[in-house]
Every structure is written in C-alpha cells, then in structure tokens.
Image 1: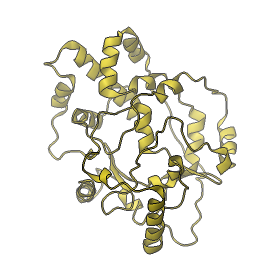
Image 2: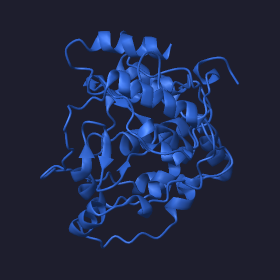
Image 3: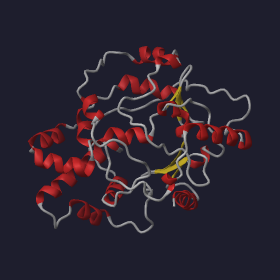
Image 4: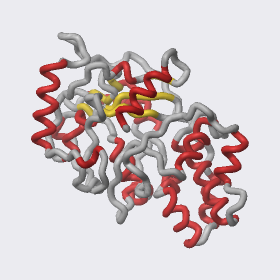
Length: 315
C-alpha cells in the first residue's frame, strides 16, 4: 500500500473504541436534550436537463471510443439512463438532519458514503492523497476550455473529453438548465491530475450499469414516500450493498474527528461513522464537535483560512 494516510489502517473495534472515547472527551456537536426534528416544509427543484442529444452521441460511438471513455472517466455514461424519482427526492428533503448532515428517519440514520459513489462510478484511476480546491490564480474560462478539449490531441480523445465535461456539467453538478457552470470546468480541468479526496473500490463490476436497467415504479406519490420513510426501522434496511467490497473507509482526517471535504462551490463536514453499518460494524454517534463550522461557501468571509486548515489536514 502506498505511503500516506491509508497506512494507518484500524479494524472496526479500534475505530469504535476511538470514536466512543473521543465522544466522551469532546462531547457531541448538539446541546444536551436536543431532539432532531423534520422540516415542516422544504421546496426542492428536480427539473432535469434534456439528455437526448448526449444519448444520441453515446449511441453513435463504437466500442473502441466507449472503452476510451470508460478508462478515463469510469461509468459516468450510465447516468444518462438513470431516471430520477422526483416524488422520492421531495420526500427525502423533509428528513435532512442539518446537525449531522444525514437523513434521520424514525429509527435509522442514512446517508450515501463518498466511497459508495466511487464504487458506483468506478472512478479507479485517482490518487487518494489529494484534495480538490479552487486555486488562487485560476486560468481564464477560455484557457480552461482549450485545455479540457485538448486542441492538439486526436479528435477521438477530444470528443471523449468534451462529452465527459457535458456529463459533469449537466448531470453530476448541474446548476442551471442547459449550462455548464464555470466552477465545473475548473474542477474538470484538474481531473486529469487525478485530484479527488476519496479512496477507490472495485474495477471489475459495474453496479451503476445494473441499476440503470432496473425498471422503476414512478407512480408512488410524495405523501406515500413520506409515510414509508417516517416509519422506517432498522430491520427494514439491507445494510450491506452487494457491490461494496470489504475495504478501508476514511473516517477521520488530520486533526479533524471526521472528514472535511472541499467541493467545487464550498466545503462540508462528512461523518462516515454514521453509516459504518454498511461496513459490517454497528452504527453509533461519532464525535462531531465543530462539524457544523466545516460547512461554508467560497463566497463567505474568511473562507481562505478554512481552506488552508482543511488542506493542511489532508496533507
């Protein structure tokens, strides 16, 4: 294993002991007697970009071009066929717990792990000891586009990169219908350097491909989903996703008792121990003191110092 933070591997028992000891020492982020409550009402837009043109382009490519895309960008094209259940998303928004940055239901806390997204997309050619952040001297939008489209490369490579940029901008990080945000081009420009803050899982199985072909029942109302989620119990959950291979999970970083993540628009605090049951251990409340202070946008006051603190923790 490469030298770095993954050299410090601990088993589940050691992680549980550390977390419980830290929780007793530093306490939780919540005041004593706090009871998490669902929002009375949350408005969420689930309008999707039209992806027909991208689907037509993908269908016209031969296997050689498609394999070139898979080798560089993982299983992103399968997102073109994933249908979003707008009623489910609007119901889920009512259960978002801002204190822990997870979904809190009747008897269960749930949140997708970053490792799970990496396993779904099979983004395997990345370095685990780097973190993305917006550079101080950012190239102009035009220069970034020229770099992304690789004007000096053969047409095949160029069109693969442009297609991947479209997927990132219109599906993975959408902000306005029909437009790719400049922050996405900044992130995408750095992807060639394999910059990402997460570890990697399987290379031989594509769960996203399997999910894309599963028929979905889309006639369940938001009210019905609310009823289902309000009564969710631990025995209703199949904790171990069949595509998640036993492996290390990044549960803390540097002096942080959780994982600070820097994204394309800002930062959040991420506490994977809330869903440790997915890794064949029990779920428990981790130490989350100052977790809320990790969340900020790049337009907020003092964000540069916070970025330096998080970057130092990763380094």
